[in-house]
Image 1 (cartoon, rainbow, N blue to C red):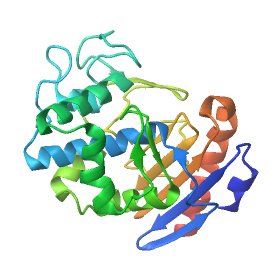
Image 2: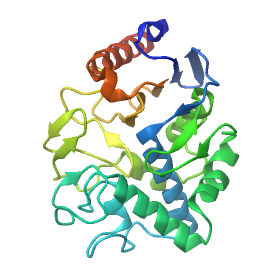
Image 3: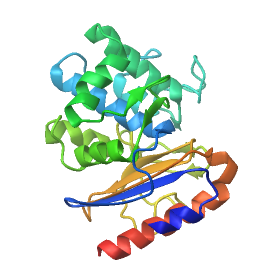
Length: 268
């Protein structure tokens, strides 16, 4: 993973998790903004609220006809950052911060505590993610470290905070018929997405490796961050940087797949 030292970014840190083994490179305690990787953590917290009985994925949330499930899988019809819808509910996969924010607001309303406190009590404290905190939007505003994100990735791989059937919603395609655009990557039809996490499917090109399985799930972020889990090889890869994705996207979309393929080849 030493290749990350050549990336055109101020700081980079990475980790590979395979089974119970973790290999890291760089300063794993450096503080990074996770950007949209935050969506996966927020979705996990929402599923904890589901399991606790505070909310249901079928609760009405957002515009008429929309549910918590729609909001967490980019199917509620909101635009990227619009407060109103730009298309009908369930018509297209429209990547949206607003939908994730509405979902978090719903959990906060039903539980009676702020979503930042809910994240801390439901995820950060139980998993020992001591350096992690929600600073701004639950769609993109969590700050964390590679050390902490390893703990969360291990939770995604072998859940302790959720029952397996509940956790499976993150990697199970919701509204499988929907196509849509992934910002910075392209348009895909279909564009599979789980609860909070993107599912690789057959998308090409993609930010994961060419040898990742279609069941790979995770997220990349506008802060130059990425995390995927490939359940077919019991492996996760995390790479965090602090340079905006838009500033080096041409390099990132070459280097992230190359690193992913190298990790997968080594695991196999």
